[in-house]
Length: 339
Ligand code: MRU
Image (cartoon, rainbow, N blue to C red):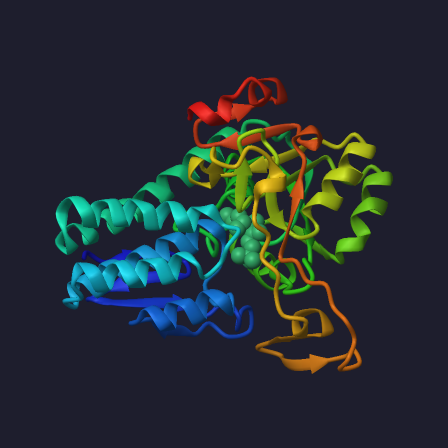
């Protein structure tokens, strides 16, 4: 497979490396990933994360294993195990399906080209979303975003953060409110890191501050990513997205979801059919990262920790996809089933 370089994944001289997102922003450590077990552990620990990127990472690993001589039967077993590593992000399933279809039609030798294409396609999809989204954002906008949707979460410039980067490139003034994104702090750790790299003026807030900012007229638009969009436009994203959509609706702040077609799941009729990953109580009882580990809740405290929530289509102003910006009317008319 040829060398492929992105912000948080690289295939270089026959080896796959992952930038350990658990250690960001304080340590930039690249880890070798050379087995299905390693990739699954990295996905579960969110060392590699973001719906598009976990699909690309799993595909590059499968192609690498094929180059190492794994036969078709062994590759199928690895593919099915990788598919189950995170249940909500449909991009992972889509990538695995494309790799398995290639395995069936060409055998293991075709997997390298397929993985390269998935990587390169994701870069292209990000650029398209960024261009469509940036055209919607006026000069001087205060944008609020949740979780991390940038170059750490994709092979390219990202989804919602890709739009933010394109707004900056167009020379428009902007300021970004960065939701810290409890429990795993993807906003405070990762989006703040990306905003610094992009040179975008930004302010970090706790998730529960967004309503007050909206009431004060300090948010012009909300941009978020997605892990799965159902056929009716309902979508799953990092927990806390739904409450943002509710308060944006109340304050009449436009609310956009930015995602490639690989995030759309036409088999899911609506949000109720989207599987939601439940995660460890430890993530809510405390926090861990490059700064160490702390546990502040009593050990026996009961915890509820869904990693994602579902925002109903009725709260969405527009769906910014790689093929254009879709209105609620277009989505209701079935636009997502004919992409
Ligand atoms: O659990 P994570 O950090 O993988 O969750 C990521 C998100 O919720 C993103 O918004 C989503 O994957 C889209 S990223 C381009």
